[in-house]
Image (cartoon, rainbow, N blue to C red; front, side, top):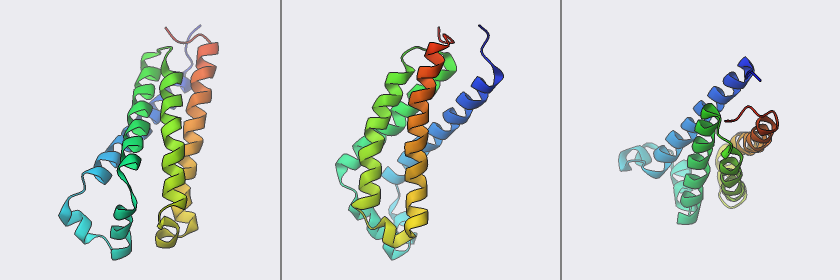
Length: 140
């Protein structure tokens, strides 16, 4: 069965999405002292609210998400596992971001919750989508 055009649109979108996640990880993890100093005091204080384990699961989430997206482009059958691993890291990371930091106070509930909701929703969608594609036998 021929892979429909919308498959490529979806997979390229999520490849770019996950690549932006990797960029976000590097920006967050390797922020320069100058860039950190330029942030408002309340935002700078948020950087102190993240223990090492959150950085580790952030890395797992974004790199397995990117790996899964590359796997979708290459049409590999293992992509759902990559997205499940990514999602298992997304959930505690987003819970920590929302409920164990002062992000709600700093950004307000709307702004602080928008990205976590999107990340969780997209993570769930990618698990479902990769299973759907496997059932359609579009993988090699």
